[in-house]
Amino acid sequence: MRRLPTIAPVQEHPDTPILNYATYKFVGLPDCAALGAGYKALATELGIRGTVLLAEEGINIFIAGPALAMRQFLAHLRQDPRLADLSPKESWSREIPYRRLFVKIKREIIRMNHPTIRPDQQARAPALAPKDLARWLAQGHDDEGRPVVTLDTRNAFEVDYGGFDGAIDWRIDKFSDFPAAVQAHREELRGKTVVSYCTGGIRCEKAAIYLQEQNLGSPVYQLDGGILKYFEDTGGAHYHGSCFVFDEREALAPSLEPDPVGRPHPGYSLPPANAKT
Image (cartoon, rainbow, N blue to C red; front, top):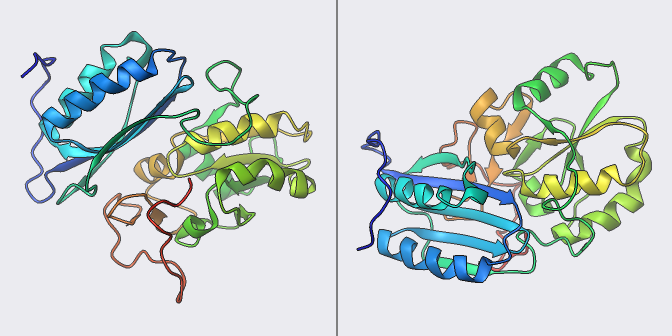
C-alpha cells in the first residue's frame, strides 16, 4: 500500500459510519488524464465508491466510503496546490450509496455545451452566502431594496422533490438546455436580483456567468455551495421538500440525512440511471 498523508483522528459515527463527499472546483487541469489514473488507483485501494469527473476545466466529485479512507483521499487531493482549497460538503449514511467507482475524463465537468463559459478562465459571478440568502428571503428584498428571485438551474425531475419557495423553474430536461431557457424567459429576470442555485453549486456557477453576460440590468449571484450548503448553514429555511441527489439515497432532508418520504409528486417515476445532469 502506498504511503498516505497523516490525518487527524476521525470522529466516530457508529450509526452512520459512511462519509459522503460532494465537491467540485473549476481550475485548469491540463493533466486531467494522468490525475484520473492515480485517483482511480487510490480510491480503489481505499474502498471508496462513487464518481470522480475530470476535465481540463476542473474536477467534480461525489464519492463515499469509510471515514478514515475518505479523509485520506481528500488529503491526497489537497497535496496538489491547485486543489489545496477543496472543501467538500459532508453527509453521513449507513452504507455506501454507490455500487461502483467511476473516474471519467470529460470535455466538461458539468455539461453546458457553451464553450465560452469557462469558470476556470474568466471572472465568476459573486457567491451569495446561504445565511444572506435566507435573510433576503425573509425580508423580501436584497440589501439595496431590489426584489429577489431564486432561479432553479436543476433538471425538472429534481425540482419535483423540492426547492425554494417561489423559485423560478423553467422545467429544463438537462443543464445544456439552460441557455435557451434564459433566452426564452429573460424578461422574467430583468430588473430583479437573481440568485441561481442547484444541488451543490457547480451548475449555478456556470449559469450565473451566462446570466451575467445577458445584461439584465440587475445583479446576478450564485448560491455558495448550493442547496446542500444552504441546508448545512440554515437548516432549510424558506425551502420546501427535500433535495434529490444522484445516488442510492435518492433525496436528502434539510438535516442532510436521507429522506424516506422525500419523493416527488404522486405518479412520478424516477429517471433512468443514465439521466443527464
